[in-house]
Amino acid sequence: RKSFSFAVAYVLLIFGGQRVMKQRRGYYLRTPLVLWSLSLALFSIVGTLRTWGYMGFVLSTSGFKRSVCDQGFYNGPVSKFWAYMFVLSKVPELGDTVFIVLRKQRLLFLHWYHHVTVLLYAWYAYKDMVAGGGWFMTMNYSVHAVMYSYYTVRAAGCRVPRLLAMGITAAQIPPM
Image (cartoon, rainbow, N blue to C red; front, top):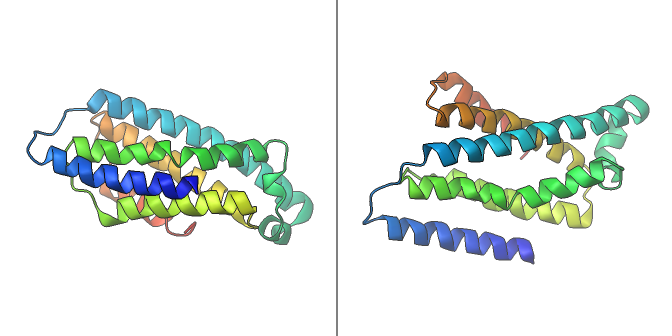
């Protein structure tokens, strides 16, 4: 239920925010955006290392089938914490859109739709301990580690090859 409340509030706030910003100039938010992206990059990097550590253990001791069909990811001593943190992180990640709205950038349907659907799925999967959720979390942490690192570098004003941005977008598709 909470995830639906967050999703509805998010959609109302982004479109309400766009309406408010329509008559205003976009804000220059380089420093806050660098700090925001850096904090999410560091969180995602640690999450990636911790969840791949668990996934590597399961793969090496029990094989691929267990990694996909077992719910152990939700109960492992380390992975349990990182699974919970993953689910919780879907709420602050909605803040990405705040920067888009306040800077008056183009808000793509895919951006906000992705945030809503991942939030809902992650909370559902965690609540019901969906088998295979460990793979979804591990892959999502991995993509976000690269993606938020890229956003940090871009927000700091560095040029990055467009091919990298396209690769990050393509890497988000398999977990979905």
